[in-house]
Image 1 (cartoon, one colour):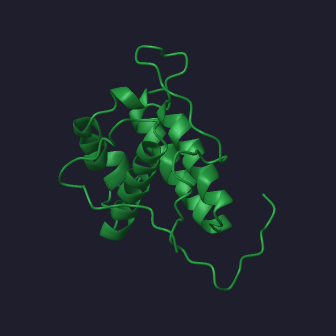
Image 2 (cartoon, rainbow, N blue to C red; image 1 turned 180 degrees about the horizontal axis):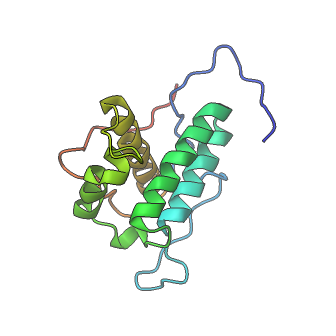
Length: 152
């Protein structure tokens, strides 16, 4: 991946793109219930969110780190899982699973590491909701935080 020059005044807060458009600036396609051929998956949300971050100036380190966190989520939740079928209970199970909370050797990960892993999936799901890929982001009540992308 080629390195990008970043503006010194660049904010680390994601910028909300124009309402009613997707990461490419086009109006999102309407999802037809029951039409699994076009229903967005967790992999679609992850790749779309990463593309959105890249387009809006996220650094290479952030993109790499978020990609790793989303790969873990897709491995545990299933990359082909339809967003519409993903529930808050299933996300809560993922948030508590050993793959997210423990190292390969069974030791507990640091709280900051676990929090980051959870935050990245939450942000991707909220992005998918904002992009109308899913009606409501399936965020567990215990993990719900008021997340809204704001213009800077």
